[in-house]
Image 1 (cartoon, rainbow, N blue to C red):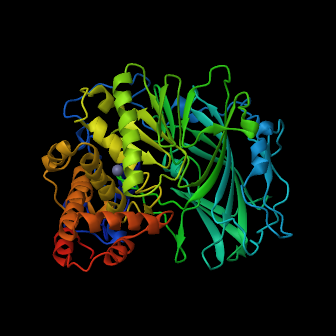
Image 2: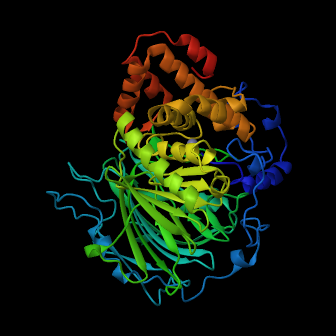
Image 3: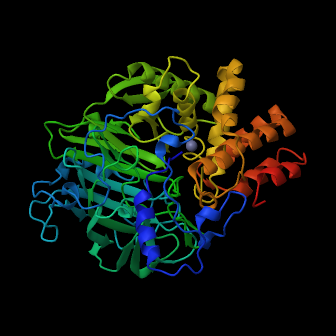
Length: 584
Ligand SMILES: [Zn+2]
């Protein structure tokens, strides 16, 4: 789930831009309801952002956040933190990133094509890097290296070295992407999704290389970085793209959640350029929207090195994977992470974080929370642990060794692969019981590790595949662990909102966050429950298990969902589809 607010600035910018254009061919969202879906090209972003405190998940009473640092600053607008030049001393000490030479973690290959290995090293006087960006030294990757038969380069690979100026809210990054062309067709260019470039003045591109050669043949606009290739990348070949950039982080409060910093937290979410999936020759990078999520991810491998410009006062860092380094030792002022087969890699840093841990049958749950919220955090930890056990049993294995939970100043909750965020407002409102948002939304976000992380989908176009599934997974959780509270859950979580609307609404088909959630999440839960009643518990749960097994690692679709369902039942559900689905 992602709450409204993140893209308010986009709305504002687009409204300004649209004011300069004629209105022909556009449709105001004010006239749109979830029963009247628009065709994809027709929507425009003109809807004012709903107040974040009025989301269906927040406590009804307002809760003051201790946001003292510049709460009125609009991300991306001119301000001292947005315009200051990077300090000349911000030079990442990358020489110790020895694990980069171990990347990728592939089995030996019987081939004379060298494996793409590279070392990230610091340079004190980089001629083309006036800001002190680390210079990447390539050692062996030939241009557009051919993938030999049997090569194990099945996923894009990211090596990212980041220097964080925590108090200054800047991150200097050297990134290398190794992208294998598995599309089956030649590619004349590579698209990268650059979420930070949706903010004004946040993403500062400094260097771009293609196969170790500096390139100026690219365009950067909005969330799209299109890199042109001199020679098409043939199917079965890989290309190496090096990107140097600085992030001038935006202020991110409850009003502007997600990526950015608050008074006590820095969240790096979708913070690096990544190659979106290419399906049938098209890059899958749906437009952002004021609420909901829009990004789609291939599974990838990550090697992340994080260091700090003020090593004497490093923040506590939460991440999608355990900190590690060569020989198991942590280098001074440098944290190294490795995560394979993941949708993305998220970092959250705070000087205030406290930590607790639990074990869920071999999966480490690492729980970061703020002082004073220990009681609620203990509940979050236990519900997350229980949910991992429940979903491992009901759907299939959790794909990673660790799941991280971060209390956050953003609204509601937000899933990323291996790490989810949960709003401080829920911690503050915690009543000591399990019957609250804190508990069930912790369960919801945990379920996204199965429906979003393992089984992905197009979150903008078919959001029900992760959101209805995660919401109904709450129902499964309560049924398995607290059967006496299932009735409470339906009333509290779902029916108190009087849900309505098409379950398969695209995010663009809805005009308010509540309308979106009522249709996709809550009516989606009703559809899945009606399906369960229609085909029976045993068939339904066997189907979910099979759906997970077949789609694990893939980007699933509604067609996949119903095709696999057809393998399990011949029961007529046409009336359910007619009642709940617009596009089927
Ligand atoms: Zn969700």
